[in-house]
Length: 357
Image (cartoon, rainbow, N blue to C red; front, side, top):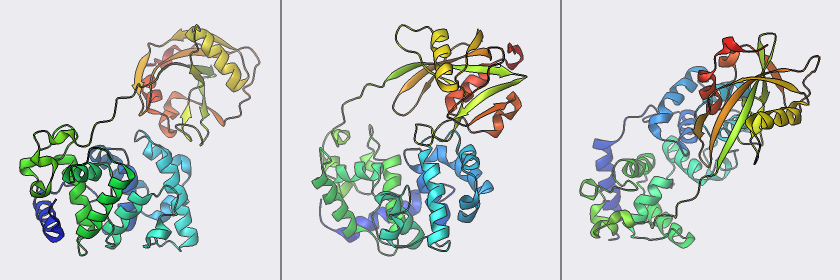
């Protein structure tokens, strides 16, 4: 790459002024809203985030309202966006800002970086966009763009530092937020993983990969990983027109959400045998099984499941004893609790009129 940092930045910002994406958080000056958008955008596409971002702000318009909310209410609004630790950490961070910084989001990197759920990228993005601090924010899109600019095959620690130094020298001191966002947009719209539109890219003249016959070869693609699959069974345990739900521990996957009791079907177990065992382990009760739903498939980020539900009721006189918080709810109360997406898929399959209670 030719070391003309001023031209590098000018080309980017000129393109951004004409081609930037229209997103609900673009043009925002409120650091709270910028921070919220960056948390939601972690490992999630902008198009999907837009709806949740607007819905969240209707319910929690300020950082103070987030800090004062119950975690369960936050998770309910977040429900379906996934990676729920982001929500829980944002809640903790909001409380910290209200307590330790008098409600003012710290504008120093080292202070902001210490907040729960805040890493180098999030701190740099929020401070550059919200406070005008000239810090490069290096996310997955920006890494890909810069790997191709520098024609790097493998993103080692050394090569990451090369990228960081180049961006530190190139970032526009007057428009650091726009500088970071244009690189994000390039990675999203032009310099895509499997299709690089080099002829429309403002960095073509600087880009080493663009001078090759196959710029998509940079970086070298990672080997595909096997995605584990699990068969899961859950129980609709009925009592007087209500069914049992349990709350997942915060330290677990999907922590803080509610779910139907049940779990993985072990080797050589039938779904019925697995459910009887799981409910005994989780609730210390025996159940009488009824009708089963058809299984549905769902994929999470690192594994997939096939899940079915079986209607059941408690053996006479037995009471639930669980280490997890539990509730008995009516079908109409489902909307009041945050559930994993797979449970919502199941709920659409269930005929709640046919329970055996």
